[in-house]
Length: 384
Image (cartoon, rainbow, N blue to C red; front, side, top):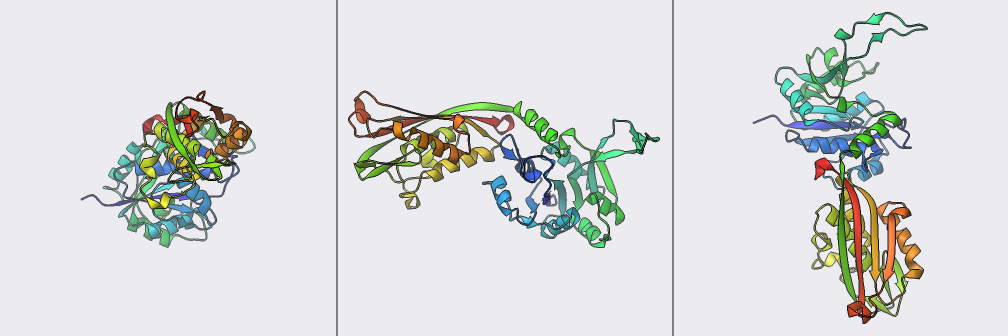
């Protein structure tokens, strides 16, 4: 039986050099937080049994938004320094082996994990490295002597260790000084650290240009999907109804298990269709009493979050309301604004239209309202 492995993601930093106005581990790339990309890469590897994320104090809401529906153990609160944050994470790690990874390196090839874990069979620690290609020289007022690059390597993360060994190394570290990484702490404790081949994909994201390059790289790997949604509800007694998240005064209501918002139901089905996640009844069955009278806002947000969890980006939604009454035109702007708010999109990406069936059929006889919707999203090709 193979030893168990915990992946420890260090995401407690507060730096905003990336220019997004928030810590870089929570900045979005291709519609998904940097941290979420790192989590997904580790969750996809069959040798990872547990993931623990170390976050900064006060970052709980940012973390929850980034993780979304992913099922993870509760985050660990980090310390004032990276070393303290790692030590807190190690205290919560259950595996016999641990991978310590920086959240700012979101694109983690599975082959690197394979090489690191294999190296732990011959050494208590292992790190991914890349050769140095540039000429290196000492810096001063003028260019100094060249440093032999053949003796140097670029050290990346994740760094792999036998858990008990790296815990002991952290415990013995002189806390009057700080370490740049955990391999430094391991070597100071006398542990041998093996080197394995790293990957350019593991370069750390720090500056706005790094994020722009990552966005461009991922954009080339995303594909577009379009899906349709349709819903219909009959009239019943009442004094108003919901369309597109907006309550409209009327001499009748719409019948349904939830709030019967025909517009949001059609939009929800369209969005679910883009990721092959069934329809609204799959996720919110009308037989379940907890959804009686529920606001359809929750259904649309659920579909939005499922797309985000797959690294998807909603490009455009189009909603057509089909009815003889009430008149939708006076409420079109409010509906558009509400849908844009629920989906976190600019109003330019929301289209709201209304039409009639020229008094033909179900809606033409004023027996109810129908809605049809189309949604276009982009998804990472690897997720399809």
